[in-house]
Length: 366
Image (tube, rainbow, N blue to C red; front, side, top):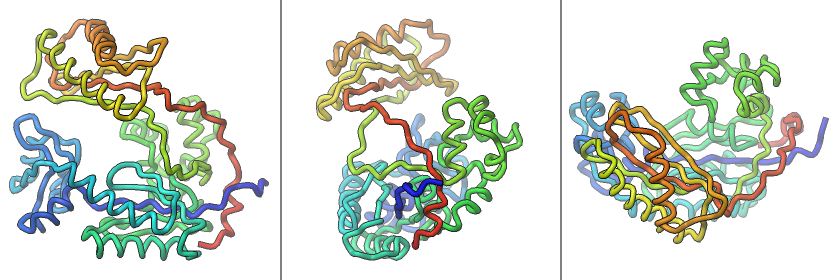
């Protein structure tokens, strides 16, 4: 049994219905009401929903028309991303009062490694409580948190007592917690994978744990190894203050379906220009161009091409996207087009992750 497993105390902070909560905070008339950020108009998509709206089944990525049917009193609010970024910076400033090991995942969530923290507080749970209280008092919003020995468990735990709550999974509780966990709660198991697991009799962490590494590799490919170790509480991923960007993209949803490739090319030019602008701003370039196409029946298709050199120039991106567009004849009208760049020159070759026993952390005081 290895005794070299890093001893970590990880907090995952997740703001409660962040975009919607900011809008309700800035406009008191919206407090206590069912609101959706975005989603307005015939082709709109909901970016975020308040908890009052979620009770009706309204959720992010849902078509605005469907959201309005589910909740007739729903109020659509135009998003204000500059304001969300401003608030996010204030929240992160609070995080840095406790540790420099902060890994933002988006504007509204982040991992914090407080194993060694600036307050000298040995309790990660008390630190999470203090951070949440400060966010409420200094920013005016509520946050939820999960606390445990690694990023995976902390993220799962942060969803347990939402909104405005927290859950700690102590080291000695980890294995039992994971065994009882519904497979749909496992971060990284999407809807399609969950259905596949159900078909194979895997409904809980315990069911998953009973499957061999060979079985999971055979049935779930590269993800099988991840599932095998994660259900045993083994994840050695560090909190990385400067996350390496793996891709960069831009997309557009159209007010009317496009049936002519001539019109699509016009839209692609604007999208390629935006992708190029973002690449240049981030001082990165990529080799792989991916064209995303969403048809009027909501089916999604992606087409990719990897070049032998890094690019960031708009014209090269556009020409590659054109090649991908003409790669296959359109059989339906298009409601969304997107271009993404991956295989960026910021990526480093991954070192094999060491798989070690979690039992060392079971005696680690939380």
